[in-house]
Image 1 (cartoon, rainbow, N blue to C red):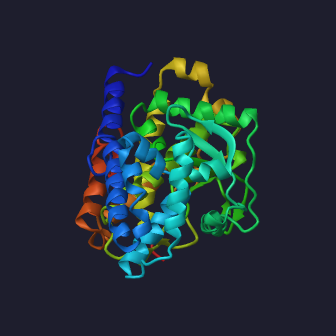
Image 2 (image 1 turned 90 degrees about the horizontal axis):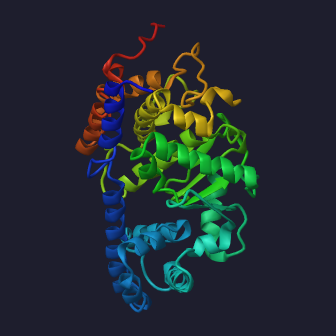
Image 3 (image 1 turned 90 degrees about the vertical axis):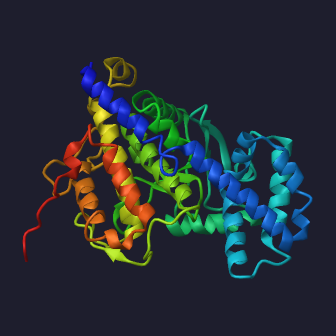
Length: 387
């Protein structure tokens, strides 16, 4: 059992990470995104009259139903394309969103448990009730409306990537991972998971090595991928779900506010051979900060959680910085704390002028949420040797 003071600090951090109205509260973040789509459709209908007959039906649904409808990856991509065309004064009929929205409404009206994209790409499996995510195959859909989504999926993974159909053991591991997050971080866990609508299983290698997991971001909205190589250890699966769900959460944040002033700025990251965009660096810090809480919460979790899901170190797993089971303690920047310290120091120092006020507020809020759990985060990172 953890000490009462440690228990209190972790619970308070879990709550703090989930309460900020702009950065932490997923209910408010998703509500703002819903309002953006509602307003967008009203504007789109001024340019695309065929949409007008669809709006009363959509707006008659309650908020939870509309959120589910608009959390569809294919529909979100089509809506973002319409926003882009509106911005560039190129929104005019005929436009792909006209047919897509009509068919999406028709599909959802027949069965509100499945969105348009889910009905066509799902393997038939869902995990994580009550925050359900469906398992899908995105690489070669037959539906012409989903070709852009599939092309983005292949571009962000590999042209040769093949999505896998989950078996019973895979589904069990994913369910365990959802259970772990709810038990260890009862506020942060469900918050991050609420931004995931679809999961794809695939094993692919990229220039930087084997893909452990990834989030679709703007290209494949509301979607994450995870390698089957990570599935034997449900604790690391939980970490990957949290990691990618947090990325999707911040993507949902930046739909309505800007965090970076210079999106094309790149920076040097000492644990990667490639430069990061400043956007990627900020997104990484957002995840590493939360992962420090996850790691601390796992280390001090109630024994009954380990009795149910097993000890993290009892499973075979690959060492990586975000793992709660196995880190490479000898590697430079081999721990999530070391990486978080580096990013925090840079984002509040050298890189700070390139952030917006909201971006700087995000960094300080993330750091402050960990003051009682991981005060070392505010300490200087490694001092690199002079060349």
